[in-house]
Image (cartoon, rainbow, N blue to C red; front, side):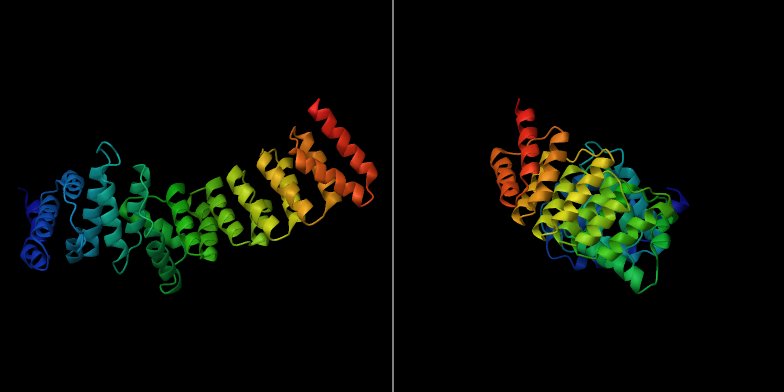
Length: 336
């Protein structure tokens, strides 16, 4: 055993008996002791199986012994644990270990940037952190911004100090977590800061915010995200946005947004056209419905028969017989 390795192990040995003294059952003691042994011997690859083979309560957290280390030593050990998991197959096998390690870190006093590193490795393994992570991560991020006066440009690059780099997946998970607890300003701050730390936002980065704003009927914010920060959104994101505008009776904005996306070559899909068209009919904007349905047919889409009838009858009812004739002719051409 090398002197460095012996010194490393000595950090844990005085702790083992005191730590296990507070365990509430023999199975917990055995798990804690086994994980401590794996850490001391640097056989980190054994940790996933130790957790999988022990289904008893995980209280205290299996990684609680890391609290006795200095911040530098703790970062070193956690990095070695994460690196050892990369070669494990199937990649999902360390999921329980990732989950407990992340839970432990997020409940410490200064969880960033270590928590972001664990989230990154979790996502790259094809797994997702447990739902409770959203609140804990959001609290940690907000605390760093407001109490410690950190910024996105300082917090994300801190990952490099422990050997990791911010990437789109990690940033998107952070945006999602902040959005889940309605901290949209902070989520938008992450989105705006990503490019400044060498991480270009993708359509999911925008889509997460657009979807949450749509759910909260923040129509102005949705329109701004689409118009100003345009990036081809997913169809389900556009459906959410149009549905929110329809519910808010702001159907003109919905139509304008669809036309904007059409002009950019985005295929928004039939469902989006149908939602907007039905929204026009609900607020009796029959002329808008008539003009919109012509553009809809230009894309090769034809509304359901009941919707076609309502558009035609609505136009006739408001005296727009000329537009009604054009619409009926267009329907006839498409059906033929």
